Image 1 (cartoon, rainbow, N blue to C red):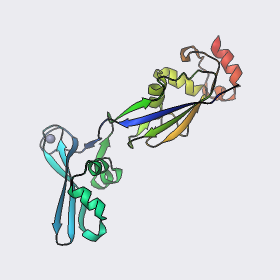
Image 2 (image 1 turned 30 degrees about the horizontal axis):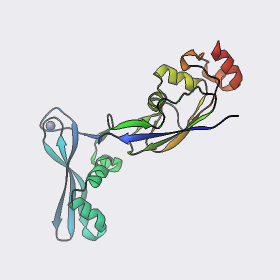
Image 3 (image 1 turned 90 degrees about the vertical axis):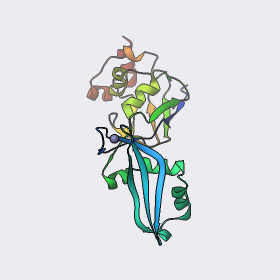
Image 4 (image 1 turned 45 degrees about the vertical axis):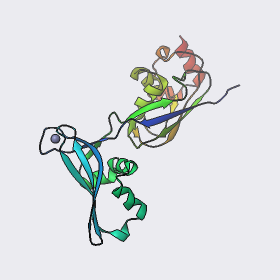
Length: 219
Ligand SMILES: [Zn+2]
């Protein structure tokens, strides 16, 4: 009898993305939030900025969040979060792709996340199918291949072999990136270490019956 094996993986936050834009004072282009949000009121109009610190020289710069927006256009909770420098609001602004686009800078997500798994290195070659649910604490774009390597404890080559053998059922291409919750399945097989799998050309692998593939892999 086949039992569905399930695993929960979580992409946990390890830091905020770097805000990449030129610093006028040094050669660094990486910035991180200073933790402060500046709000200036001019009558009923508000200007709101996210304050940044240059990683290279510590220079402070600001990113416009709202410019001359009427006070009634912002909901009260949001305005209070701006005024209180709420860490959750700083985090939201620092990770905002729309704010980055609007202000013409890039976000660098390297080093912002770590993968946490409930079962360290679940054996992708167990006899039963393995269903993995991946959740994201932050919208860091993560390459699927990298997730497979980290979560299954595989080398890049072994991960590619698993995919080339048609055994990983993904909602996106393996070289694509994901940034939100998704699920994938690894088809079960007879015990064999990934290193012993025979590399089957992709078009063939799709047509070969599972049992045939396993026989080939075992030799
Ligand atoms: Zn600088």
